[in-house]
View 1 (cartoon, rainbow, N blue to C red):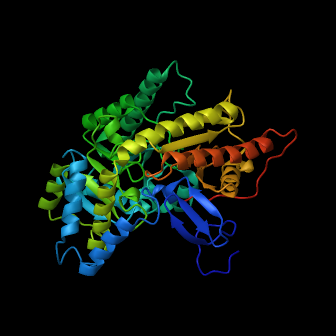
View 2 (cartoon, rainbow, N blue to C red):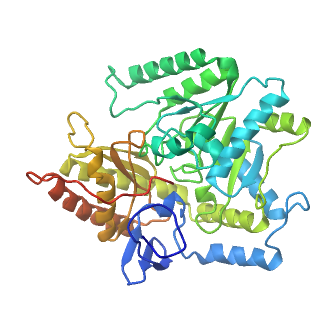
Length: 456
């Protein structure tokens, strides 16, 4: 146990960070780490950006904080306009928050209040996927399908209807199209059994994040979910806290699929690790109905403060100025090729999946049957430890509802250049080689006592 008054999760003592620059961090002992996961998939512009610092200082020199009921502030208006523009005007209204969990919580409450305002108070349930992760506040946790996080709070959350999404790695259907058709049919049956008239919204990530290891959806599935929402009169909420602001090569991941949500959440990359800021984007008719009924009964002290919004504006400007969406697409292709080359060498890298600079690697004991390693072996934690020893930070989780399976995410900053990407792949290869020696050793028990945090 640490003697520090700080506490987070149980686990081994951690090195103290000293400083950071670009895609690298250094600890107190001078050890260097390439940030292969952008912190918690948040530091999208890397570290030590003087342009972001200068924009923040300039705003600090004017005013750092105003409360939303006392003043309007120009950075908030400008950032809201910029975010609407990123959706090509499809989502016309913006509500600011300070984190991803707050963004999801706000979207859930806005959706519920919309139906109360329009005379449908019987709508009181959400639909979401299992596995999934949407945040740590009670409302967001209620739509999360990840058992270790849900279990302690199951009795005090409003649990959503959890349905399986497509699993293009493990399904046994005739082909992917048949798989999507079956999953959509099962989803329809589950909603009909639960009463479609009681559903507020369907909540999902357009590309899976930490809970699934970048498990992919596809256009057919998202079009099917959009059609179900329209048929049953409920809303579609896309959680882009992790995928938004360029991570997949477009401003928002839904833009790859041509399916527009009714509400969208974003955070992480909007502040890029420099200041907490997130947002809910919504269709105008939803907000209008709520405002005409007396206003949105929700809010947070720091929501939309000038410093947060000035930071967000500087982040968006840097992404545009440096053409980072194109960089994500180019580096993403090389990262995909590099990971798949490693998979050919290490077959227990069962699946490599992703988009842009969001890639997941699922580790399996048997690539033929796709059987996961025994949970007690904690291979996700071991892989993370080996990578860190090689000077690379990756983001690990369990794959199968948080109880079994092992995966890690490779999600470097959007700014990573060709040289640093090759260094990332080389360090990853060294860590994989060391893990390979362990998992293929005759008679190896492979059991690891170390753990990795199961929280975001």
